[in-house]
Length: 194
Image 1 (tube, helix red, strand yellow):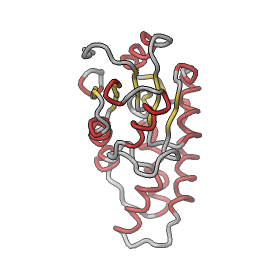
Image 2 (cartoon, rainbow, N blue to C red):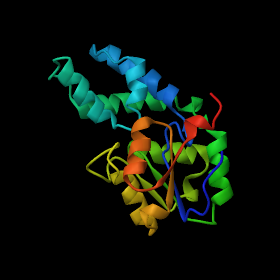
Image 3 (tube, rainbow, N blue to C red):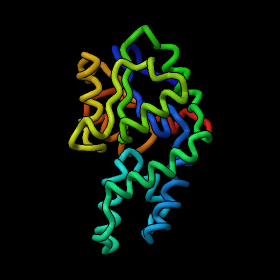
């Protein structure tokens, strides 16, 4: 993965960037949407990567005339279904290699649309939680990706100006958020094996 020179900090998305979690998330989504009678095509799931579950559920419930669905309860059910499949999660080796090469040399953070509980569990599962000086999740900001807030908060916690940070992402919404934050953006989809 080629990179432009001299970032002062690296900020990584987690799901789909550091960890191969997206297929596991999709299986959990299929289970819980079927249970609730919601339609959620796989293509749309991937397009909404980085958007918190509760926000997606609000959108789907509104679109499909289902005011009876509680987004927070649905999100808890989906997270439980996800954790049942946790053994299937592995690292995105190419991105982990970048983080490992910079570990202890420059500040690094995680900026994820996932919940703090889920993201810290994934990072612990991969054995890399202690590599990062900050872990910013959907509970830490009001505006979610594609707003830049989660990346800006990660830079703030690291004490590095956003323009001196490089962000790594695997979704269009995430790339938009990194660019809106004024950071150098790396789309890992162009550099990793399928």
